[in-house]
Amino acid sequence: YTLLDGHMRLLALRDLEVENVPCLEALDDESYTYNNRLNRLSSIQEHFMIRRAVERGVSPERLAKALSVDISHITKKINLLEGICPEAVELFKDRQFSVELGRVIRKMKPTRQVECAELMVAANNMTVAYAEALLVATPSTSLVDGVRPRKVVGVGPEQMARMEREMSNLQ
Image 1 (cartoon, rainbow, N blue to C red):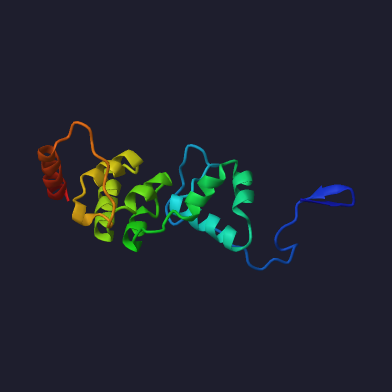
Image 2: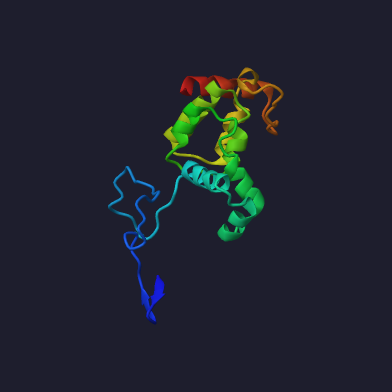
């Protein structure tokens, strides 16, 4: 809107002589939604948008203030895909998930990241708790060097071995 001759006037991009405008294109059918004014971004789209804004000079502090979130949340979103293999990113691309999911997934080697991403997508369960359960059931050979999953109270080595066998059968 602009004030012209004492009247508010809506300016079109054409009026402003803008030829190109960046935008998002929905590739899926969104003809029905309970709220047609609400359109959620996937976590990865949000990551790329925030990263692009920072690359173009917007400070993370300013983004945090504009989005009413803590600066640490913006930092986590900027670094969301660090240490996650491209194949796993591809599986997560249309999903919404917590930034903490990346913290858990990056503790695994790329092949295990893909396996866990496939399991999470198939189960439609993108929670950190499920990712941590998969991490605990991950053999140490599939973990990034120096990473040890936390011990699960009440689960002995015998039960852990059985869980690992069942997980490999499930895959």
